[in-house]
Image (cartoon, rainbow, N blue to C red; front, side, top):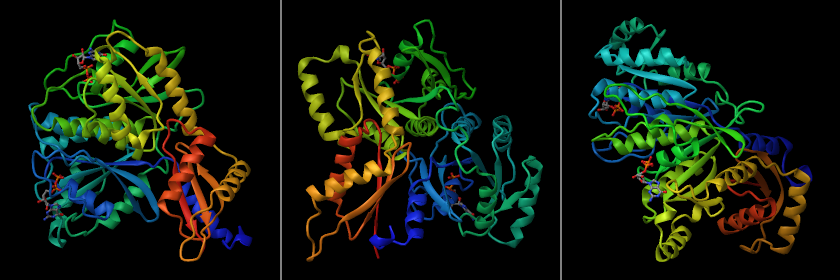
Length: 455
Ligand code: GDP
Ligand code: GDP
């Protein structure tokens, strides 16, 4: 490194920064209007317009990356909900339940000006049951005089209330320090489910693509879809299902099995559930209805799984209904609409007839193998050396930027750091990614490549 002009500490720093494993997840929960979205904006340090959202406008973004005091984590915002047919308590509880289930720690926001309501008490019960670390945020304490209101919230039995003004930033730093105290360094469930434990699959896709049908098919027909009882909250349930002689854990299947017919906010629920399932899983099986045009909603779900860095399998369902013409157009749509996951293994299935169910497991195994691949540094640099010699970066301003060396900083998904003598253009980065994929078979996994340039 030194002879290439990089200081050893810079190299080590870059590798460490790129090599972080999966990030721990912080959920922000509470009643509507207590200031959750305002707080999330504060935490992520930018105004991502979550507060400006008009009622009824679909919000599909629910997880954000944040950093505080040098530590990175993910934040799940549950601010986008609307009260639905179940009534306010059940709605808040259902929202909170998904978020808490996916989280490693929780910030519970209460409006200190209003004090604890029955709905707040209901969330407290959920929090107790879940047993996750909780930081109590007494929000809307905009000045000294509000601190007494915050003190009343000791009565919730969740420990010290942290007086905060999400709107003005007062007290948020102290509260985040406390969050970092309780937030584990890595997600609670280590990937791989412990030694020999089952791998975790999230079966996701927009409503009506056939998730419930597929789950029933793979789990055996005798399993019945449970009807949701009005007023009960949904338990996220992980189910162990044997496929191809291996036991897999399908995460959050209750959300698939029990169908709540919501009049409002249904899309938001679906997004939150999808995000929660993806966070808990190692591999996402994204189900797409092959009989219909690939939609923006399908693409958003794909993006969610890619951004979360999960292994990905694409399953095109309802194949039994596709005629030759539709199959032709589907291929074209896949090329144009799903280019961002051109590397994902693909299966064409029918949950109705059982067609190609046996191809699901090999596809999942391929994706997980790619996701876990580690390329030894020697092999990587031999490959990079040949690549750069055969296909040098175009000359820019009389100079030729060169990739000098590289290393794989992490896996799950694979993360690479490349060290270069000058700015490497986006097109050349894509070329390198493509060649890396060809050479080391990263099928079914996103890969991250960061480039450090010598000063
Ligand atoms: P959510 O429904 O829990 O996500 O709540 P929002 O973040 O949308 O906030 C609801 C309302 O409370 C908005 O009008 C915010 O401007 C306001 N609000 C949020 N935090 C504070 C605060 O710390 N102080 C005051 N005075 N108002 C706040
Ligand atoms: P979910 O909302 O994603 O769980 O979708 P469902 O499993 O409830 O399926 C939605 C509809 O599509 C139901 O009427 C199913 O019977 C139908 N369906 C699911 N899979 C298939 C399939 O492979 N072929 C056909 N023809 N219909 C299917």
